[in-house]
Length: 435
Ligand SMILES: *Cc1c(COP(=O)(O)O)cnc(C)c1O
Image 1 (cartoon, rainbow, N blue to C red):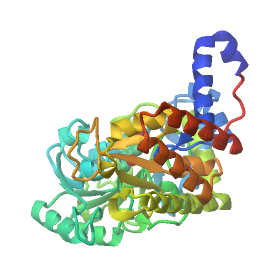
Image 2: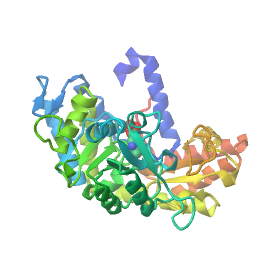
Image 3: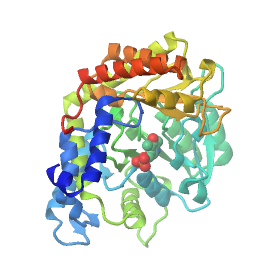
Image 4: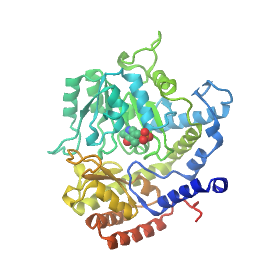
């Protein structure tokens, strides 16, 4: 980064400090990961200069022959990764991909049914401060408060809600749900009420691509994702269409004289519906990341991510931590800290002092505000990329527990910070920080 260093030392210095932070700390934010040098290099290229509105072979600008190659590689690899016929790799983010789904399937004021945000759902699934809650009538299903399905979705209740509300669309997907989804049951409910079934696999896409979680592509009409969480690519989004490639139930209104396939409607919802020019440097990085995910080593990585999460969950529970749903099927867990006498906010701050990064998170039926919260969310994708295995995650739990037990003891926090640095030095990340 010689040019940046000499031409803009201020920005350069901040970037270097951030890379050092990533190198030296324990990253437990479940939605984050560390991309490869190859992905970073693809993003930092002159492809950022190119306008390429439209799709490969059908652009509104000249000079697109090489970015067409790049986007075609990204599309082919994504299709191979998820076993589907159609994909759009242009959404700038998960939220943009989701916006294109709403624009395609719903009219303003239409009702859809999604997972309650306070039970692990995402802002774009109907939050009153998000376009999805402002423009559409968002209704919710949630997780059970107690009983054998405590912390889990009861499909009978989802069916009752769907029969009662007759939504035009049912969404699945979450930011803080530690269990897998029963896509078959969701699909049969959607069919019963004539709804489009949409799965937002933003968090779990990598684990699904690796074949380690249930496969939504066989059941959902539309699937969206981010590319930067367990999929370990650049920050971005993507839309896929499952086996129902055509226009299920004729529910998608034709916008011209001809009845269009859902895939065509989704393409035009992304551009010109939602976005202008696609980010071709990011699409190049997506292609690289998808290529990496097609490699056998990505399956090993995904399996390790799950084994680490399971070891971590067991270690927390052995120390008396209350995990929502008593464990995890995926890469994350949600810890209810109420029996530990600390809020999510204070736990996040104290762990931050020890260079362990987590995020505070509402737990289902939380009695505290989203700014305080009763819980934290932790996940294994990022540190698994660094090479940590089960016994290392047990050590991480010991470190987290030491801080949560004595959040105000500077000696304890400083001691943990030392051990964090030592652990990170055993698993180097990026080697391009110039001190
Ligand atoms: C992270 C996430 C998103 C949003 O992705 P952005 O790229 O941050 O817009 C959407 N849906 C779910 C379920 C997520 O977890």
